[in-house]
Length: 474
Image (cartoon, rainbow, N blue to C red; front, side, top):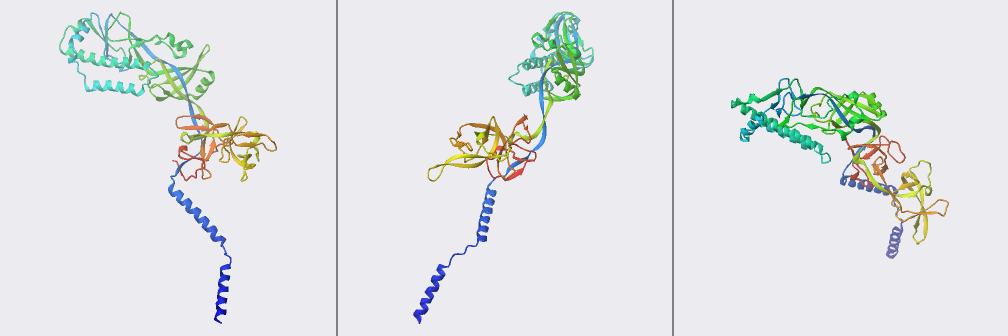
């Protein structure tokens, strides 16, 4: 009896062991989903957020650069007697009626007195040194190794400042010493009116903006005479000139279309390349012979450019409109080139195409795999592709033909990384205009961008197909 019961127990155990395993599909799916969520959570915690940027329609203004001719209300002042000239004001400085400008020494007596006064008594004040320091700082700020002409202007400017300060100090010292000889042969000359003093002439002082011709822009015939201290002049010689008004003009030479556009604008924003200052100017147009000229009229900065006859200016005039994106988002990328006849498209403007690529199977046999690959651009009869399934040297088969093409050509495209789908997807762009910070690109182009797409703000922070956790740039 016991043996029978033991046999029954063994039979029941074997049946239990042979019972098939019942797998709950719901639990398996739950585990897989949970594992994926856990993986994404860990990846999210380890990853750094990528700054995104929403593409919007915008515009940039394209600057045009011109070399202009300055026209001012200028009056040349002539010497009333012969002698040695010494100046007591700085070039470009505004003087009032009756202010001391220069002296004429008919005998050379003042030069000897200045010399005999000695440099040890010529002590400059803190204000004097501040004036000289400001001149130097202004020059170093705008200095460019490609333009040497301003160095000469700075030389004369600094020389005029130091000599003015030196002459005034020494002259004051001589006057305080009670030297009676000073008034015998030295004539002090004061300003006949208010204005800005300039110690040079160039024969353009009587030029009117309405009368400018093409020949006036020819710098080969341009001469500028600079006046210096202790120079001997004859009666009737020019000794300096005055700028009598704050109003002045810069005349530029343009084509008729540009002139008409500027005339219609009425006023434009002008940047002076010498100082990088900008201000508004009213516009008018005049024509002489074959020349078309635009007159830019100003009411400020006349003293800043008092010594300049020719001036480079930049006018913001050609506005470009399109998709506005930051330059940091732009990247250059290499692609394989495949002739368009080797692609099979579902529709004419499809973003993907099918290519037949020869591959080796597990048995070492050549087979044709048909791959749906993303298209990035079509140019000069070639499609630009980039996929891990296609490498250099692969053979692509033409559909319904025995013709083949070996992948060997490469080309580069400029683009951005689109992140609409949560990963970095390269999109080709066509730049219409670009400045230091932004670019205007063609909207709604094939394989390109559209308004309100999201792109990576800094293209250097991602690679192709990277999963992107984005934060929006402000």
